[in-house]
Image 1 (cartoon, rainbow, N blue to C red):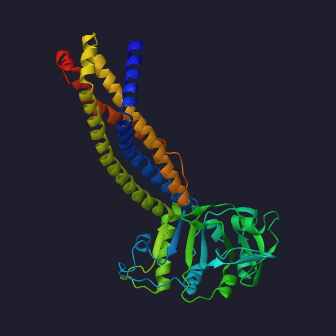
Image 2 (image 1 turned 90 degrees about the vertical axis):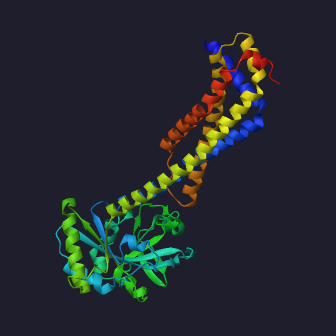
Image 3 (image 1 turned 30 degrees about the vertical axis):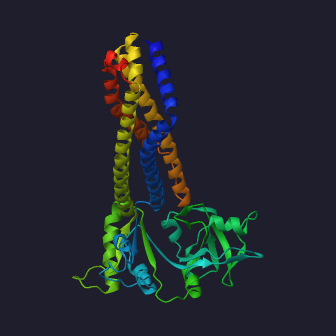
Amino acid sequence: MFSLARENIRIAFDSIKSQLLRTILTILIIAIGIMALVGILSGVSALENTITSNFSSMGSNTFNVQRYEFTNQRQSSRERQKINPVIDYRNVKDFEDNYNFPFTKVAVSFTGTMTAEVKYENKKTDPEVGVFGVNEFYIENSGLEIENGRSLNVFDVDNSNAVCVIGSDLQKALFPVENPVGKTISIRGAKFKVVGVLKEKGSTFGNNQDLRVFMPIQKARSMFTNPNINYSLSVKVDKTDMLEAAQEDAILTFRNIRGLNPIEDNDFGIERSEDLLNQVAQNTAALYVAAWIISIITIFGSTIALMNIMLVSVSERTREIGVRKALGAKSKTIAFQFFMETIIIGQLGGILGTILGILIGLAVAKGFDLEFSTPWVAMIWATSIAFIVAVVSGLYPATKAARLDPIESLRYE
């Protein structure tokens, strides 16, 4: 039995080699469908991994007070029905003074510039460093960690000390061999003593999170005096079960600061990292559905193409089938030969499509600085689908070949 199966597999490979160009084209058609599935699923998975890791580092017990809700931020300015005023320094200062909910830490920050040039002795960076003014709680609330030195403290902030914390890439650029802690760097002609270096964070969508400088907020305000600076507030609650109450109290406090009456809607947004993760999950779910729809359409075409080539193969080899039956070959042996040929072509297409899909997913992850992970689930689905395509495509041609009359087959020209 095993020798017969081995012989049928050998005949199947010989048949594939004899029609090499047609077989290659069929394999490519199957591979395109599988590639679409694996490639899109890999890319979406890399996107989901990156966004999830970035937001989860903030922790589920943190929420932000910002100018717009996340849903409004994604809309174009033309679609906005209401333009919220910026969160200015007076707003954040009043919030710090009046928000007294227990077990909370309020982080205040603003972006001074994203195109700063930082110098140390005779070295300098390209003008692409982000400079942020922050208070003593910002680094902790943002999920950032100190690798060397210390963070900014309350004395630095209250006294507007000329100190700063730098990102890991800035350390590599200016202090490749030296310990940066205690060294003095220059930003826009102002001198700052480095007191800490952050752990490496990586890039997201081309935004390098390790090429940043954090300085006390008052010191940053004296350097960056742009009008209408929009500040950010982040509140971390030490006890997770108090998060909802802390959030409600923050809304009430900020409404009072804004001078809103009870019937007016909020002119600011409250957002938790957990809400962002839920929004990301919804968006990626839609992308997964789109990937499956595209792939199913392509795979349906692959099934038709593979069935067509096997029907043509049955017609071309009708005389061969007649000879084999005349020599005593059973119908199930003939069916097994054609069925095995279909399975081989389907699996070759599945393997090629999986490899191409992984390469596409890897290229997308590298191009957009995403966290790529091997898409095992997509690979399992691809292998299963390639097998199902081969089974569906091979059943009818194999059955047709097995039912051919040997006498009529021998007369076939």
